[in-house]
Image (cartoon, rainbow, N blue to C red):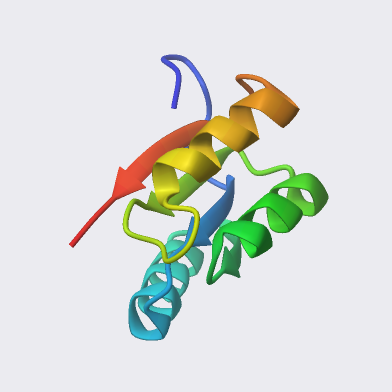
Length: 90
């Protein structure tokens, strides 16, 4: 989140291949007043980003197939520096 920007009511994309983590993170963010969508893998993340236009992406680094770093590269290549990307790892 850039200084001076609103931090409530954000659109947040949560990307994680662990369904328990995905669900609990989404629930916590929704309880804090954010709009949340989720994706369990790289392709789902790319599609959800294009459709949802999130302000923030919580991105699991250890995704199967294309890992989180590759997803971040693809997001930046396709959409530029629009959302704040936050790496998440266990």
